[in-house]
Length: 194
Image (cartoon, rainbow, N blue to C red; front, side, top):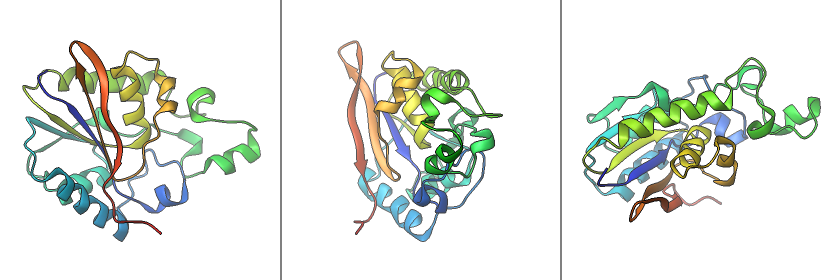
């Protein structure tokens, strides 16, 4: 790979605003989320990518389209968000009322996807991306992109907990010589929030 991986988290949805875990539920962007997606396009300034991959969920696909990359995008099923099983649509605070001290990174999700499965999908995305001759754009979701980052760096998937990733942000992964590194992280592209 001669370029960087550009990680682009989708714009705001109703559930991302409330903090509800949004895995397989296919929510649209809010008005703010649409404005954030357009701001991502402005921040990217028409940058050329050798490959543009997007999660199949509409929040990522719409972010990609509004950022100006819809025509170039290829849907990559492995970029979909973590399946939160029984915790889908619930906030961490709500889950902790039932399961004290719960966190997705260590506790897992009943009837959902195991972190190892999310990691395997992330590794498949990395394997596809490194074959591209230049920069690659990945339009996806918070937890999956965090796991992908951990795996890029050679860390266990649960180390994704260390990489806070807001909605409508740009991050890049690349190399310092032959070492895989983070080159930019969690740069906000959305409209100013009060």
